[in-house]
View (tube, rainbow, N blue to C red):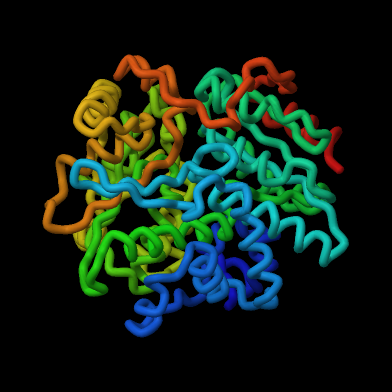
Length: 461
């Protein structure tokens, strides 16, 4: 399997090289040259596989340059710290299936991919005798999951930028209470988009990237998306009794990465009827799907802070397929967006989008009401991000097709919103016990790329 850039500026590279490159050297995002398509016999064989075995089957299609036994060990080790034997269990509540993606060490769906990526980095660095300085941006969950994926690992330092006071208190503590020598938290006086833009700028400076051996943990790294493809298959197999039965996934998203994994699963042959993209007030993706309007707006702070994003990093990968795998068209569209803050789409392109995607923007009031109503009806607590997905699903979907809502975080990570909605304090998992009393380490910095670049240079390994 070879990998290419959405912007067409690199020769095809291997999976290992794609993982280490992160962002393509031409500024684009890496994608497999060909997406494998699965026959009915393969899908039937996979239906009853345990999660780790299914992950091996799927990931090995895209990572054929890692010996199978070594890949199995990497995958198995990646899920050792998950507290549920199924890794991503499916729970039926009030006519919907809740896909619980929060049983990892930081209680968020990012653990599914970042535990794997951390092990993958360590494996590749040891194999190559190299070191890496990971640089990433987070709106809350990516940062803590990435830090817990690489803390204490050899030959790796990690620098995570997060918007100061714009994550939940628990999200911030999950990052800043990790005081291992190889972990550097940077709180930026700006938005997530400011943090993400800086990170992209650092990776776009090829001399800086090469000199300091920068590595990417954001979903610009293809391995992140790949690991998330697995749970779409796993959930669909467990929600349906008939292989011919279709499913609908409702996905709360801000960066388009999680739902893009579902898009890849669909292209591989998974029987997905619709992908329902749920946003909060930061609704650039909803406006794109419903109206063909991909234009910048102002970032609004909400009770679902991991979705408080305007520029969706993974959207470029979808554009590549929407533009019929034409990298020149992708490049032109992004250049236009950079100049005007807007992209335009033809009626045919909008029709193509509508064949698979639905979307709904859910405001803060609706989110809190959904948490309350769902708890009253089922006794089940939703975190505010998952509530956005459930609320969107309640508007759009038919009960004739199994509906799977992705639960992207444990409600205890956003207990203030949950208590506000229900009056009920979520039960705290053991990993959060005493977290408020732990020592913290974090650098508060202005939204200044030059200053943050200098900080990375001083602390890089």
